[in-house]
Image (cartoon, rainbow, N blue to C red; front, side, top):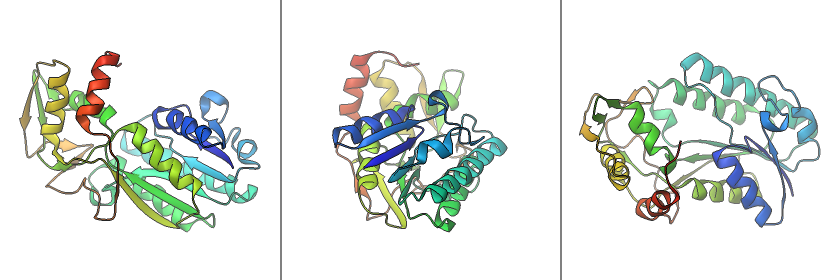
Length: 254
C-alpha cells in the first residue's frame, strides 16, 4: 500500500515510516520539511494522490489554547478535504487517551475537536488514542518545576514507548478502517508523580518530586483515572525500566 504519513519527520512519524517500510509498504513522510504544510495546504493535494491510507501523527508547534485549536481544526479540515478529493480510502489519526475527560486543557479540547471533524468526514477512518509517551517525562517534569521541586498530581497514568505507539498506529493503518476509536497504552500503571520521579532518579536528577493535588496536567486538574485507557485497550510490552535502560545508555536528550 501507499501510505502517506502526515508529521512523518517527527518523533512518531519517523518511527512509523520505518515500521511501514519494514512491512513492505510505500511510506511517504509529509511535513513542512518535505514541502507539505497542512495549515496552508501547500503540497497537500499532490502528496495524497494515489495514497491508499493517510496517517496523521502531526502535532501543534504551540500548546497555547487558541493556537493549538487552530492547528488541529484547520490542518485536519485541509487533510480530510484533500483525501476526499483524491479518493483516499482510510484516514488514521493519533489522538490522546482521556482527551474527552480533560475539558480544562486547551490541548485536549483541540484533540476532541479534531476527532469530531474526522468522524463527520466522508472518509473512512480509525482514531488511535494513545497514553502519554515515556519520551516526554522530562518535558512534563520541566513544566512542573518550581525551584528544585517538581510538583505533580498522583493521578494514575499508563505511559508507553514511542516505538510501541508507532507499531500500534502502523498496525491500524494496515488494517481496514474501524470508523471509530481504539486505545493503546503501556503495560504498567503509575502515579503521575511516581512515574516522573522514577525517570528523574534513573538519570541522576536531584530535583524532588512533590505530590500536589492542585498541580495541573496540560492545564487540567486530575483526580485519579482520567489518563487510563479502557478495558479493551491494546497494551504494549515495553516497560518503563526497559526503556529507561536504553535512554540512559544513549545519553542526554535535548
